[in-house]
Length: 128
Image 1 (tube, rainbow, N blue to C red):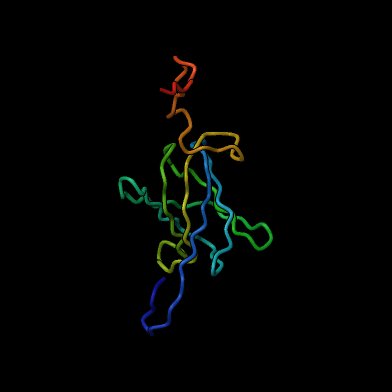
Image 2 (cartoon, helix red, strand yellow):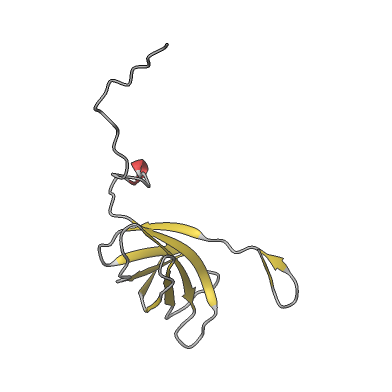
């Protein structure tokens, strides 16, 4: 939640996009306002470093489609803000990006290949 300068209360809405490391990446958003030259501020949530990206913009119905080379690393979470332009820092959209190269996203598992099941015994219980 947030409180504006005139004390009205609102909520920030973040959507989660899942992208791969393969360029170009594409974000399909519904911004608060339309912009001819939007700019993306992409922040790595682990390192807290922010990169400025000037994407190419197209429209798909009511959606704004932003394409570009985001230079993101696998298994990292990023927050991003879309601004009106490089001269106007008004935020028109906020979101999150999780980067993974897993292809079966419907079967996506956060701990993929991090847990190995023990197979050296038959897992029988002995009651005394």
